[in-house]
Structure formats: C-alpha cells, structure tokens
Image 1 (cartoon, one colour):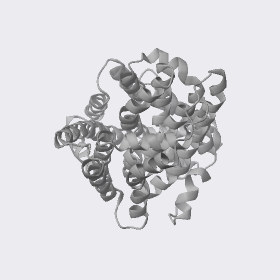
Image 2 (cartoon, one colour):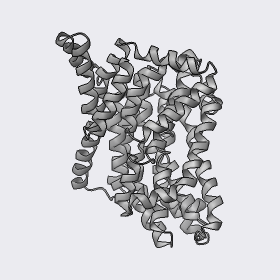
Image 3 (cartoon, one colour):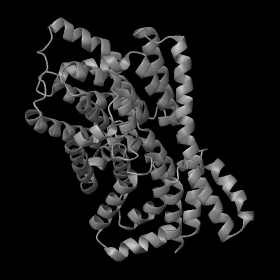
Image 4 (cartoon, one colour):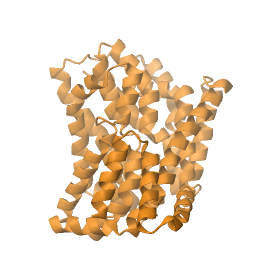
Length: 430
C-alpha cells in the first residue's frame, strides 16, 4: 500500500508543477515524518549531504565545462566539417553528417543537451541552407543528440557508477559499441527514408588540399576522445581527473589553437556550466533521501516480488523494466528518473543475474530515448528553441528514427556482449 501511495504522491506533486528535485525532497521528508516522526529528519539532512560527496561526481562539472568550451571555441564547427567530408555526398548526406558529428562530439562532451544546443545550431543552419525542411533538420538533430551520453565520456555513466559502486572506466568502455550501434540504426533509418522523402544530395568530394586542411584543422579535437580513454584505461588518471584534463584541453583549443575563445566568453561559459551543474547536483542531493526512504520501507523488495510474480523469465522482466522506463521517461527528466529508479530496479536485475555494467548501459539508453519523447523530452525543447520549430512538427517527423533507437535498445538489452565485450577485453572482471 505504501508503494502505491508513494508512486501516486510523486506523480501528483510533479504534475502539479513542482520541480522534480523539490518533489523528491518533499515526499521523502513527509514519509519520514509520517512513518517514524520528526526525529528522523536528521537523517534527511545527512542523506542530502552524503548524496553529493562521491568523488566520481566531481567529473560532472568538468565534463559540462568541456562541452560548453567546445561549443563556443570553434571545436564543434571543425567536427561538423570532418563529418561532412566523410559522409556528406550521398542522398540525405547532411542527415548522416548530423548523426556522425554527434558520434564524434559525444566523445568529448558526455551530454545530450550540450550536443543539441551547441552542435545543433551548426547542423540546423547547414541542413536548412541545403534545402532540408527545418522540422526535419530539427528532428535529426534531436535524435542524434541522444548518442552523446552513451559514447564516453558520459555524465549519466558517472552518476550511475557512483550509485552502483561500479567502475566508471568499465561503464565508459561498455558504452562505445552501443553508441555506435545507435548511430548505425539512425543512419539506416535515414537511408531508408531518403528516397521517399526526396532528401537533397550533397555536393561532390572537395579538392584534395581542402580535404587535408579540414582534417588537419580538426585533428587536435579528434584526439581528445582517445586521449580521455587512454589516460583512464592506463591508470594515469581517474575519470574525474580525465574530466579536468578535457576541460583544460578544450580551453587550450579554443583559446590558442583555434583562437575563437575570448576571456569574456570564458566568463559566460563558466557561469552557464555552474548553472547546469547546480541543476544536476540539486536533483542528486534531494533524490538521496528519497532513495533511502524507498530502501528503509522495503519498497524495492515489494516491487521485486511483484515482478517475479508476473514471470520468472529474465527476458520478460527486462522487457517490463524497459517499457516502464520508456513510459516514465516521457514524464520525468532522465537523471532524476535514474536516481529514483536505481534503488528499486537494482535488486530486481541482480536477482535475475543481469550484470550491473550491462544494466547501466540499458538504463542510460532508456533515459536517452526519454529525451526525445514528449511531453517532457528535454532535447525536443532545446532543439525547438534552437531551430525555432514547434515541438508538434518535430514529433510528427520523429517516428522512423524513434523506431531506430528502440531497435538499438532491444539489441543492447538482449545481447549483453554488445556492452560487455570491450570491458572484458580490457580486463575489467565482473
């Protein structure tokens, strides 16, 4: 009964317009008072503090900062130019470029919103200038941005690693192949739709010297993703320290290599990065006592028994979890949903033998699809603002590519090797 009451209460409060972080804190505090008494509120304060003191969480502000520095320092334009050089000549070429550019930028920012807001401006302008409908360009920008937090580095993986007490380096490796699979599924959907939508065909291959100049200009930026992974895998730096290096590298690129980053812009970037970090950390802080309440009231055990009562087959339970996450992702922001769902779902997946690294990838991929599903899909709102295209127009265009994302999710869910092969190869044992 308490489980249903909490679920109904949190839904009512959120739908009433209360910010998610505040809603989580209010429900947690009220439950503590009603079940035990006001004396329990000292635990509320302790859990708020403890929820934000994990060392891996220090990576979040630096990866946010790195992504924002790249967006204003000239890095994103050069990444887009390289992607256009590689796949821009076929029918629907700029849609493929959009996706490939998101794959490359994903290896630097770790954030779907950074991709949609920064790279999205360049992608939208280039596609509309080439004859694509603004709504179609916005749609491809939105769906391709979901790759960002899957390919390392990844802010959601950092948070999940902190919650699950698993290696963030292993999670980063586990996201590489699923992220590439997402890109393949999206580009397949683009290729299938290119003919009946009569998408424009790109220009021919540029002169050799121009192609070389494009590659050389982007070479420093392209070296950042492998550099981040290398320093983590070789033990030179932790993911948190690698995030600091990425920020310094992004600043150096924009300020001294590309010379497009001014000190005035640095101030604005620092302010915006602090604001974005505060939003994420505020949710994490107030979700911590909510998670404690769930565990203290044995709600995960109740849900585990309910799911096992429906079926004992792991594939059925994973399907139920996936559907539930997709539905909840329509109404709850991704990081908040991860923190809410983790203490409930982790005992369930452990009981059916699902590897925590594999589940982390499945969970984050689910949440990324939620970023492009109305009514709360954050990337839809970001792209809508950037492209000045109403959200209903984007939603009408999105379904073929949404199906591509669902196909990639199902493949990753039911073929664990897609996630686990690289971590095993590099010696992460489970």
